[in-house]
Length: 232
Image (cartoon, rainbow, N blue to C red; front, top):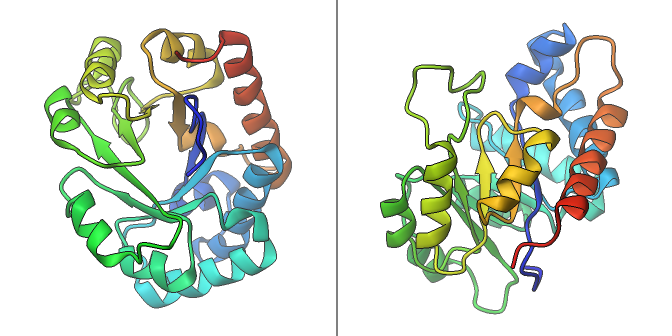
C-alpha cells in the first residue's frame, strides 16, 4: 500500500453488464470491454481498480484476471477483487475489497502471507461501521449521492454521513462512492475523504473508445484532486 495521506484518490469500480449495455454490445463481449476499461484506467494513473463482478464464477473470473494482469502488468499493484479473497490470492492481485457484511479484515490477515504486500479495503455505510472496522487499508463510504445502482429514494449516506465516517475512521483513508464525478471532488475533499470511487462515471456512451474515455476520465479526476488540495 502506498505510504500517502492522500491515497487512494481515484478508484474505478467495474460492472461488466453495465459496460456492455452502454456500448450496445452483446453481454458475452464483456472480457474485451472490461480489459479496455482497465487498460485505460491504468494509463490514466488510477490508484485502484476494484473488480466487482458478482455472479461471475471463480473460474471465468480468474482466467480473465490472469489475462489482464499479463497484458497490463502495471495493473497488478492496483487491482483488488471484490469479496473473492481466494481469487485475489490465486491470481496475484494487489488485494481484496470486502463488502460491509463480508468476513473481517482480521480474517484476511490470518490468510494472507505476512511477507506479501497487500491491500484490504472495506465498504461501510455508516459511521458505526467505520468505527468497528480495524486494520483496513482504506474504507469505501457510500452511497453518498443517488446513482444508477442506488437511485433516489434509497438509503443514502449523504455528505454529512461521509463526514461522520471520516471522523470515525481514525485516520484510515476514506473513499466516497455513489453518484461521484470530478465535479464532486472539492466536496469530497472538504468532507475529509481522500478520494472518490465510481462505476458509471467511467462508462462511456455507445460509439466512444472505452480505453481513451476512461484514461481521460481518470486524468480529469486526478487534476480535480490536485486543484482541490491535499487532505490533511
